[in-house]
Length: 469
Ligand code: NAD
Image (cartoon, rainbow, N blue to C red; front, top):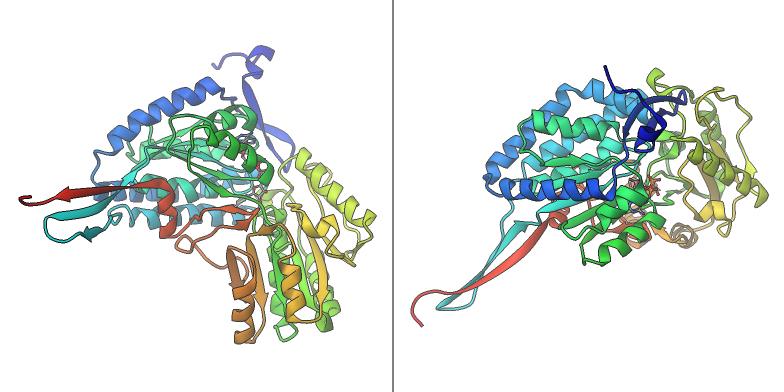
């Protein structure tokens, strides 16, 4: 029988809610700075052990972990759906993506070598790519296991151990992942999860003196706090922050196909993706027609508990629902017009009907700030130059969608947008092998692809005299 839950024990726990029903589905420990200390100390021991594993064996272990996640994919997807509210199909896709990250980086584990630099007779220099030791990962709630695997898989492939601080709203799949890592045969403390609050466990991890690298995925405001804390020990940080990504549509595009992509781009995961296509920039001649198609498609989307696999689940929490709703009210106060008809949402759960704003000007806050909900702002443009000015007119630079049949134009615009990730005629295109990241306030560093491994390795140069002096 488990110990009775008292007010005293509750202060050391976090209640985890199903946002579709508002019911508490679990309680997890609320990790303290001391817990983080213990986790990092254990991960340091683990890192020493991990360095003795041959790279090819490390790859095999990661492949075993990929197989373990794959074998439990349905359970993990259901757990993710209950924790986040996201539609089950989306959670299934994200878990499949996790297997993809683990498989991809498993293949890289034994291919991380340096270079030799000839210095002429009698001397040789070479570089060695060494693991950084303990890597820290502070993860958001919007795609919890996917964001975890995106950074933990390359960190492990590079021969490190990982300490993970999941978001307080959604810690459940991270906790199960750490168990799966053990079950798959990874060394003890290869993956350690400390559930807890951002200002407590997160802050302690970001400022910890014994971590070799930190990967932070989350909001700009928290990113700044994390960078400040990491600066104390000059810890290298990969930041993956927010966005206000535009979808640029030229008049020659296939409007029906684009309408479907625009709707998916802003409503997938209820708009809670960093690269949600939340700004629709449309060539004026087709603006009204495209908006009408977008509104019609949006009206046909189903809303409901994630486990019933609707098109849209709820937002993650009551707090986030208040935030997104306040932007909807702000847009109307700023003079923008809601193009959608009224629609009912379920009584229970943090549901919000998608909103399409027209009559938006670039100065409006709804056109510049990340809302992180199913809220689209549409703006017309007259020519390519104006499209680029609008696209580049925010502080963010994460994703950009370009829709046109004109290849020259697509490549020209791709070359001039201030963004880390450009998608031509297919929004959300890519995968584990394709580097992803932002510019401007959307962050530094790259995840996915081989380039991501750089964040988890440090180069050592050795210069040697060879032969007699
Ligand atoms: P958030 O910044 O509130 O929280 C992210 C993580 O940081 C959580 O684990 C939280 O507990 C922790 N945290 C909070 N305060 C902290 C502190 N002072 N020190 C250390 N850690 C702290 O972000 P969120 O609301 O969970 O996620 C949404 C944001 O994440 C959006 O802005 C979204 O665009 C961004 N995001 C970016 C990417 C990307 O790849 N660029 C991917 C997913 C989400």
